[in-house]
Amino acid sequence: MSDEIVVRFFESADAAAMRTIIEQSAQDGELVGFNHSEVREWIEFIPIEGKKTLVATLGSELVGILAVGADALIVAPDYRRKGVGSALVAASRAHFPELELSQWSGSEETAAFLRSVGFELDHYLLRLVRTGTELPPPPHVPDGFDLIDYDPDFFDTYFNLVVTSFADHPTPIHLDESLLLAVHARSDFDPTMIKLIAVEGDRRLPVAFTRIGKAETDSGVVRGRVSLVGVLPEYRGRGFARQLLRWGIRSFLEVGVNEIELEVVATNGRAMPLYESEGFRQIQSWPYWIARERRSS
Image (cartoon, rainbow, N blue to C red):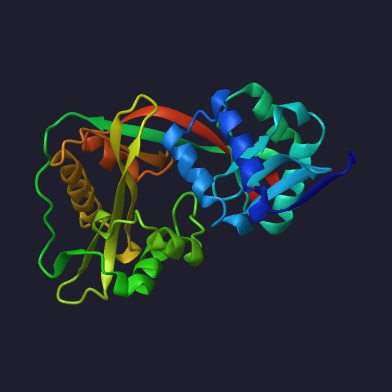
């Protein structure tokens, strides 16, 4: 076997070996931020996100992956401390200067590695959960606006709304249009899980949105998930995010889903007070790291 580490982009033939590495890491308790449902979802989307996933090989063996979309780096246990992780980081940064990496395992060993490859702790991602059966007030939007359903015929409008709403986020979201199209093309995509607020009488002028879904925890409990809530900058401060959040909460409670989760960056001063006031409480947190050069730029 060659001892040369080769890093390249994911290819379809890598899928089985990659699945093995990810599932083993999850079984070893290293993916603290992922439950089994989320691991399966991640694996399913890797072929779609192939252009954002790099793999490392030694000879014919796939020994490590770096998934930019998931902010995750995993090296097979037998190949650690052999330069695989460093090679993946170096290659990824050449293609993705804005690379972030999450410290899912929470271990000091992982933190030491990230420091060694030029990263610094930047922020924490928090998981919040709301429990109980108390319904919030029904969503209400002010005069001049409508609460509307998502219309697949206006995908481009929706995509632009998502991108613009998160352009000034504390950790900007780099959303790939082809990925979102692939998500919407899946057989399990449910357009009723998206709600928007638009200028009255014109669904082509949306100003805010939310997307919700469901996830099963490792204990088998079905949780609702508020995946995204976004408002265009010029329409903030009118309570649109709260109304969309209440719509999502009520949608879950009305079908008997009494645990609802979401994730938020700890430094997001706009979102945290809103979520806490609607009954969400922190249950987990994960450190995120960025390159030192990026911080100083």
